[in-house]
Image 1 (tube, rainbow, N blue to C red):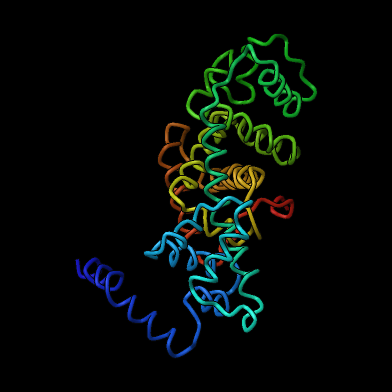
Image 2: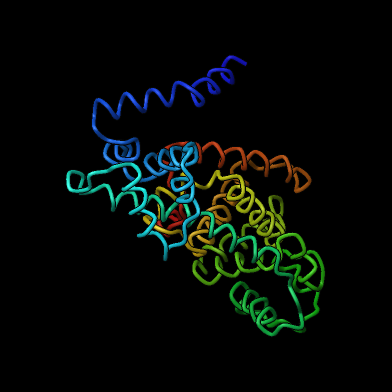
Length: 298
């Protein structure tokens, strides 16, 4: 209760006067102080984001969702409104621009992720079918798929003889993640698949993969992924960066599952939540950089 009261008091009153006093003493606005005093990455960008979000200025708040084409004009408006002397602060404009690209880029990326999640797998679409068959070829290169509708799909972790039913929750986002992992880290994906077929510690590779897509999606939706992207992407994050994070989850969950040695697959939900909590804890660190690399396979 006390913390809530203090936060309300700080944001509604004390923060304004502290900013006014610091402006008077330093001759710089809050945005300038953040860019000059904070290390590039999550620390700087998160503080810039908070400052813009807390501002009463429509121009400053508009910076949170600015389009890249309008970025230069908006920065010029902010410089004018905040009376920033760029001739005395040569690095401000570039540093501020990078922060805005990260902030607005995160929102745009989530929109793209959400659009892909809402896209339903359609067996009538050739592109969708090609992606699914490509997944089989990458994971099972020495085994011929006898037919499109087949019990063989269970060998890579789908529930029935037609995988399209398993994509209902995450749509094409689930398939795209699975395929990205298999295409870009083929050896790692096959290694994880082999682990999933362990006689005691096995699990359904594809179903778990789609579940991890939901985990990545929920972390992005809540904003928990911001520090990671702000630290690992210098500029506007792209769909590839989301897929790379999925690869990290897929590989790390497999290691986690084998290390924990659950009694049976019936305990999946409990260990899934335990892994989820572990990742969320890591994402709370200011210096967090969770990215899948080939070095992680050693």
